[in-house]
Image 1 (cartoon, helix red, strand yellow):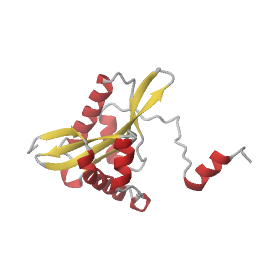
Image 2 (image 1 turned 90 degrees about the vertical axis):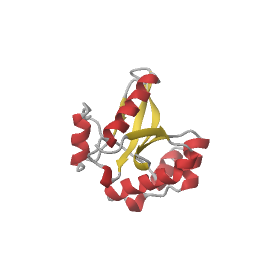
Image 3 (image 1 turned 120 degrees about the horizontal axis):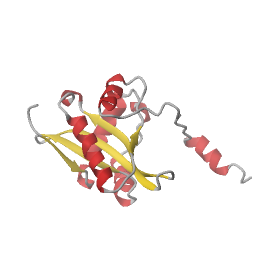
Length: 163
């Protein structure tokens, strides 16, 4: 496999690398036009407000992948869970075990912190990722559909019934 893979929790000083990974993932998913995040926003939301955390994988001294996650809550389990928002490995480091190492580290965090589950979403067309996740024992939640409101629709929903 070449150089060893190490993983560390991202700190404020790692925000430029985190943002670089976010942009790389957005490009891969053909969603680069949707990225609004900048370094100041990430610092505020991740560290000042505690909204998310990230792990950074290194191959030798080179940042080669990341996992950005946050905590959610399962009412059925009565426990917190971890939601993996993004997992990305730079193209030139794929196939070397980086993604698997990040996922294993995140599963370890979930267990150490008493979380009841680890979950994420994956684009249906992203066959390499779907196969990777299935090879790690992940099961698709085929009976569930993700719903989202943003922007003007979010504002309209917040104001609904207040007029």
